[in-house]
Length: 116
Image 1 (cartoon, one colour):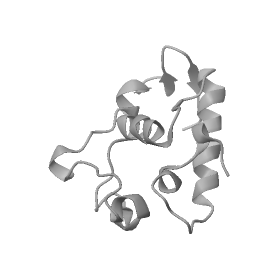
Image 2: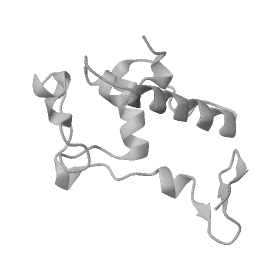
Image 3: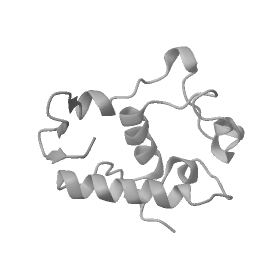
């Protein structure tokens, strides 16, 4: 079991078969936390965690995430997400926009340099 704050959306949506992508998601959350000095997604329940993730990275669609509607909680109707026309748009790039001149990731919490 993965701690809620680092749990990927596919597990929150009821996936029982998964690969290394769950580890990559968790590692990304940890790296983001190291850069910001705080966790990026701090949900208290599975549903709150999903809402925080979808608010930041956007609601998945059939084209952006093939098979998402085959995951247990969506397939059974336990939860539903807005259709493609009403989907939440990603906010991650807007919130942590790269400065094109200096190749620095700017945020109110961190200023990270990376190689281009």
